[in-house]
Length: 184
Image (tube, rainbow, N blue to C red; front, side, top):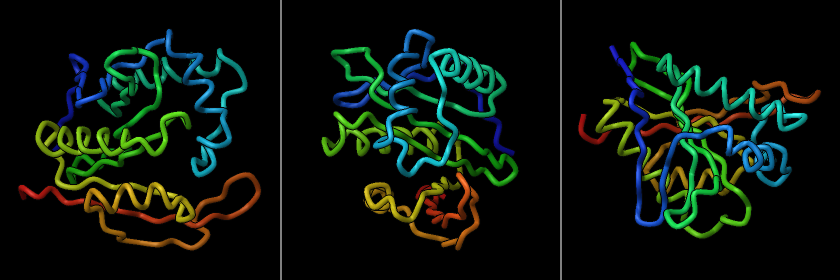
């Protein structure tokens, strides 16, 4: 059975980026990202009402990480520690060696190849360190940028669910993408 261990926190690096632990000092940037309608357009999650909600969220993801239930990285440029996005493994199916992968990025950094670098690093970590057999991504089918990112990294659409998700008074569709560990 999968037994993730996120202690000590696994900082990851790419050519341009550091994927690091999120702290309360990141609350202003995270608050912006979790309330900006461009960022959240396809992320059907409650928005924080104020900075205190964001601090509570940071403490919650830290507690869940300490219990090895999720791992959330803050995305920052190597030359600037300011948070520009997040990436997470959540919804572990430990008996199946599977986890869900999710991400968000500040709009100033869209279309610069940043999520491509992030995805490569996090997928590598998932397969080679965590020993995942498969990685899942559950996206809003209208999110073409996410679809293209996943397909670029060889994720395959496994399912399309009609109106399976109720959000803000209406039913939405979901698309499930999956990637199998190429090493078996």
